[in-house]
Image (cartoon, rainbow, N blue to C red):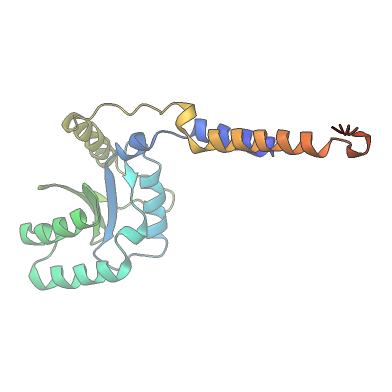
Length: 195
C-alpha cells in the first residue's frame, strides 16, 4: 500500500504542470483530398514529434466533419483560395486549434490566423517534413508565447494535493488498525470496587 502511494507521488512529481502543456499552440491536421495509404499516420507522427506544438487528436476534427468541409470548399473554390481559407479557418478555430496543417493536392499547407504558407512537398514513407514548414510551426510557439501575458505556472505545494492526504489517511488508519488488532484481550485485568 505504501509502495502504491510512493509510486503515485513519484508520477505526480514527474508530470509537467498542466499550464506548461497548454502553452504549446494546438495544431490540427486536415486532409482536403483523400489521403494516400499511410499518409495520415505518417504526418501525424511527424507532427507529434515537434516539441514546440501540440497536435490535436483526430477526434478534434473527425472524418465526417472533414468530409463536410471538403464538400463546402469544393463548392466554393479550390484551396488555397482566400474564400476556401476563410471557411477552413472557421473550422480550425472551432476545433480549438490556432493553426492547421492542410493537405490538399498531395501538398502540405500551413494556415495560421489569416496567413497561409506553402505549398510544401509531401514527405514520402522514409522522408521528413520540409524544413521551412517545421520552422514555421516552431515560430507559432514563439508567437503564442509573445502574445500570452499569463504568469508561468507554479506547482502547488505537495500538501495541497489529494494524493498526499490520501497517503496520510491510509498510513494513519493502518497504524490505528494494527494497534487495535495487536492488543491481547486475554490478559486484561478488571478491578471491581464495591462501595
